[in-house]
Structure formats: C-alpha cells, structure tokens
Length: 488
Picture 1 (spheres, rainbow, N blue to C red):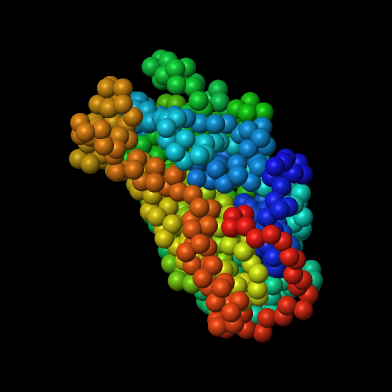
Picture 2: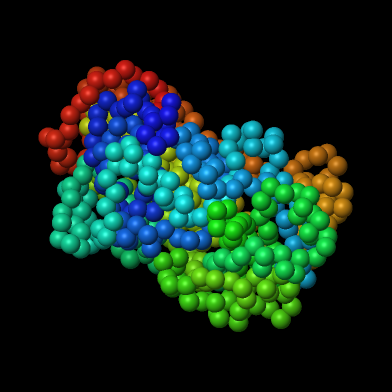
C-alpha cells in the first residue's frame, strides 16, 4: 500500500533482527540498496563523496523491463512516469549511409511476460527518485563524505573529514575503481584496454531529425513510442534515445569506436571531449549522425576496459560485500549496468528481510554472491554481444546481418526474429527476452524456500552456530518480534 511520498509501505514486512549497514557510494547501486534494506526495517547510512548534484549525471539511462519491474514493485512507478518515457521500438540504421535496416518492437506480449516496461530518463532523475524514496524510508544519505579507509573486520569506515563510522555490514557500491573493490581483491587490479571507447553526450531533438530521410520521418510518425535509434558501422556505432520530456525531449547519444584508447576516462570527468569525438568521425557518415555529433553538448569520453574477474565478492572478514560495478563491471554504455545494480539491491533486501539471528548476517552475503554471479555474467555476455553486433566490421558476416535485417523489414517482421520459416526467434532476441524476463526477487524467494529455511532451522537448533563474522559485536542490536512471512 502507498506510504510516504508514494513509496510502497512495508511496515508489516520487517526483519526480526535489525542491523546497521554502511553503504559506500551514493549512485544508483548505493541508493537502491539503501531503499531495499530500509524497506525491510534495517538502518542504513549512505556515504557519497560527491555533493549530491555533480554526481547525478545529466545524461540518459535506459531502464529495461527486468529493472523497471523491481522499481514498480517498490512503489516508484508513478514517480518514474512523471519524468520518464516508455519506449517500444528499436530503429536500426547503417552508420555510414543512414539507410534504414529495420525495426524491432518491444511488443505487448513481451512486456506482459516480463511484468515491466522499457523506459528512458535522465540519470539524475533516477538518482533523485531513489534518494527521496530511501530517505522517506529512514535512510541517512551523507554527501561530501569521501571514504579514505575501511577496516572491514571492525565494521569501521574513516572519512576524509576524520570522522569514523561503524556498522554491522559494509556494502561497497563505489564502482569498479573504488576502494571497496581493491580491498576485496587484496591488491591493485590489473585493468586492460578493450580496444573500444564510448562518447557520452546529448543534443536537442531537432538536431536528430535535421537530415532524416522522408522514409525515416514517415516511419517515425508511424511507430511513435519513443524509439531508441541504433546505428551500426564498420568498427563504430551509435545509439540515441529521447530523455527529459520536461526539457524539450533532449536526446541522449552514445557513440562507440574501436581503436587504441587509454584506460582513463569516466562519466565523472568534465565534458571536454567534443573535438576528440569529431576527429574520430569517419569520412563517410550518415548526415544525420554528422549533425548530431556537431550539435552535441557535454561530450565525455568514457573508457571501455577489461576488468579481472573478482572471484569472491565478500571480504575475508565476512563483513564487507561489493555490489554493482564494484563486483561485476559491465562496459560503459551497456543497457544492464543500472539493471544489475537494481537487481543486486533487490536481492539484498529479500535476503536480509529473513534476518533473525546474528550468524545469518554473514551467511547472507555469501548467498547473495551465489545468487548473483551467474546472472551478472549472463548479462555481461549479452551486453558484449550487442556491442559486437553494432560495431561489426565490414565483411561477409556484416553483409549477411544487414541483408537479413532488410529482408525482414520488407516482410514486415521484427529484425531480431529468426531466419527460418518456423517462427523461431533469433539468438540475439532469445538472449534479450531471457535477460528481460528474469525476476531477481523471485529467485531470492526461491533460494530462501529451498536453502535458507533449512539453514535457519539448523541454526535455531544450535547445530550450525559457526559464523564467519569473526569478532562481531551485537551489543547495540535489538530484536523486534513480528509475524513471519516468506516474502519482502
């Protein structure tokens, strides 16, 4: 039922044992985690090094159905609809000529199956929604709180100001280059360049249609539904989509290039890379894309790097867990970067709803890793596959891709469908449907029924009381008795 500021109330679904979490990082992953854990009764302090404004990007974000259904379940649908756009079609074109290759629709059947929507909005708007919802549930969010040292075994976090905070569990949501990932690694990570880069930028919607062909304009009028544009080129590509409907429907623009690029470059950098983007444009380019690049604002070059696989997401102390990009980095520009972060938060909320005894606090961190590892690996593989499809270099495979898309478009079919007459879907579309249809909260509930309850009963019988928590102190933790339920 509705709660404060429209956020779903969970007053009848609180954990028996309530503990204090410190979340390092106040981006999407950190704020979502704060909301998920406060919804089930825990105390959460979020520490964000930024000022609460500069760290909320003006760029766009795509919210796939597997992500939106979680946010809808948390009671945020109305707030998201106020600032976001629902998208239905993907429009594919040839990067160098502008020729339309085909259309793929997020059809009603798919959306019903996933119980979500494909939405578009600004990064800043999503952060604001998550912040307000988390605070309304009791989370404390501290900005200008740069973490300089962590002692996981003591649950202690030291800030640049000299303040020291203590919590029962520390959640590292500070990204792939953050302190928490380094602590869990136990060393500096060996990062390699991927041979690709993305330029993140925005421009006005009039720029996007300035050189659009009559065919494309007719199609745009026909399909409606806030399309996402995908331009596929020879070692390069671009995606664009409308955002911020209250600001004249600006377009978010991501341009991919293959080549030798440095490891440095992040969304936090000042937007000073426009000339670099223009220098990389090929001689032959869709006139529409040319005008978009020249009319772009706030251009930032973001490195796409290859990170080592982090074998353990839980620090050896059993009191520090990394999530989101800090645990399983997905390349910049990927559709599931935020999706996996929201799923991570939702699974944590589901697990810690069942907290009844101290020993479970550490156990749930390991359960989280088991639940999330393969799912995040599958999402990463899907993102790599899509970028490879977009930036495929000229050759027989690229020609077959384009010819197949054109044929399906002329036949009135979705371009990611299968190629045979049986109606089977293409491999790319099967992957997308599988990722979109996944329900992380259902998976967490299933884990509890199949495994968690058995372990909880063993603990309550005193037969499995060994904890990985080390010298954990519960002196300040109280137990509140509530009715037991099986889902948060």
